[in-house]
Image (cartoon, rainbow, N blue to C red; front, side, top):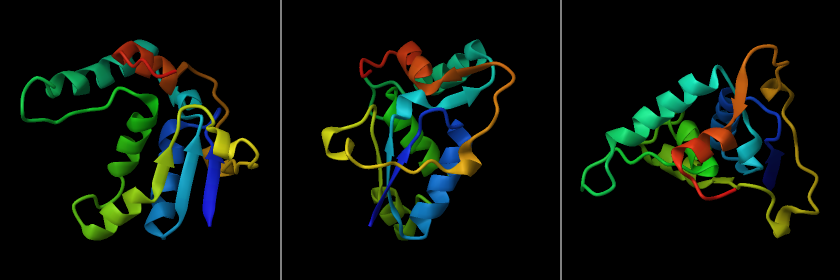
Length: 141
């Protein structure tokens, strides 16, 4: 059984921790609309933080770390940091996670789940993962 989650309006880190816990329990999860995830904090600080990570790994060289620019891959990378990636159980769990920008045709008729724990009333400054991804140079929208 596949669980479909709509990420629109949910908080980035909260959803990532929920998804990490559930894929480690053996659940297969599909996350839709990853570009609409909310990242709390000042936009300039968030863009600088992710921009620094991009600058660490140069794609023209052989060694990494190679950090993603696309919104769906940024979310997958944050989930990857929350699971035991270097063990086979963590790798198997990571393969059970599928993240998309927007909603693909095969999931258009499915009613997605919205985890209540990932919601938060936003009162301060925030931006979306899509805006950070666009700042990093992603062409996927």
